[in-house]
Length: 332
Length: 289
Image 1: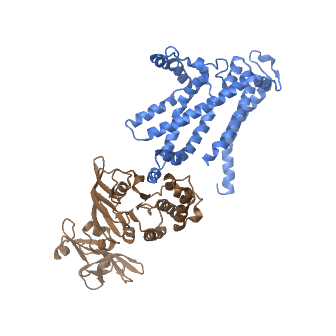
Image 2: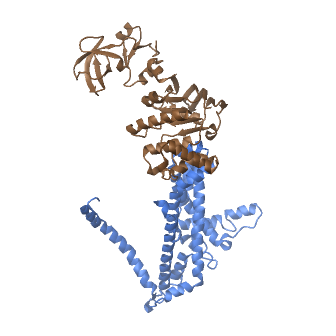
Image 3: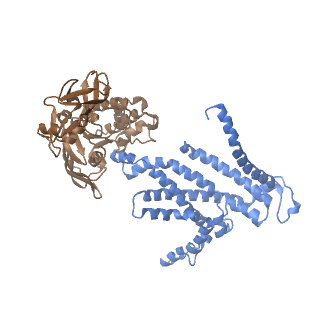
């Protein structure tokens, strides 16, 4: 139904190659997240799939059909934009019904679908309001409703939660995930937030400068990052990298240890340093440690840890939790 | 202006400006009203006397009066139709990126910089003239009889000239409205399957409604007082075929030296302009909320 395949898709604006060539296979019903730092081309890639940008070369297949040059409306995809892009002078009902009206659908069927979508998204009480009278989260749901009613073969989300406040973002994240379970439709979701990527995705595509760095499930990326970039991007707080003597002892150019993979002690250990800032959250304790003649690292202890600013602390990477990288940044 | 103190202070500080505006408006209006009830002719300024409603009756019974009102409305509506439709079309055209965009935009705006009498003279002598105008040349090229525009279609010619002058204004306002339309909305509509025509009907047109309202309101104010273009081209003729209300008043005041009659005409024009204004605000004002 909603399988999407990209073959050597390249996109350049003038002389600049934004996407130098991407191969990607998205299976029907999968929740795929494109993640990467801003300017990595993830939004452009999504717009290329949507048909809002032409490909420079390459092929896009949707449902087994070549859609490389098809108009956006013909691809059977629905998109939710970052700004929601609701039509301000139309009521919520008309906004949601707009794609159906454009498709000249029977009015009774239009009503049925709009009501069904409103039901799913808790918008029934707001159908006669205009977008300007809705809160951010409600607008977001209207935008999703407008996408749902078309019963597309895949949904495209372009950073849909970035305009919401933190609490609402967590709620909407869950709602979108639940929606995916309910509809079981392919979804492609673009974000720069790795937490969104980790919590929602079946498959994460990590992009940097238009290149796919790694494709895999959230825990696969967490446990087996292909290179230093992916290792540093996935996980919060970021992975600590140590170079030099410590790394050389382990036969690598650099080693990476996640903050949660340190054993901490106030008396002995492999690395020693002075605590700069200690963040006591109750459930966790984050320690910002300046290693002796080494870099500044962050370590996480589960639960409470009675250490304060200026205390000396010893850190030992846990067995089997050390990532080794060669000089090019590839995992060993 | 949250507290009572700041409110009364604000009122005090606004007062001079409001007073000045009031005086500026009330004094001429009161004088015009006063003159309109006088038998006051500049050929005979010593023999000024009270005339009662005579000036109004005289103006109202003038056969030119209803012709002038009709011409005024035709002129306003004609120019509005051309500038709004043409303005939307040109704005849509120059909104897309083209080569030499800056130059094209300046050229399109330039008619607005030409003063009305100059523009009218150019049209009269270089474009619409039956023997050496551009239109005449074109007509002759196709073997047709050149049209004597100001004799055969006087009002239409003036509408054309005035529309040419106001088209840049409409285009400019409508273009800025068009540019403020969210690109993502257009893209969303594209994905929703709306073609160019549907996108225009459902997105662009409603978005531009407010700008169109502004164009209509502002232009109506100025178009009710069109005068210079008529003076330099047709002089209101032939007959009264291109005389509007403003020009009729000018005729009374400056050709017949009848100050009383002109003042009465002026008051009638003010009343009519207010009727038009109320009608307009009712019709399109809700777009401004």
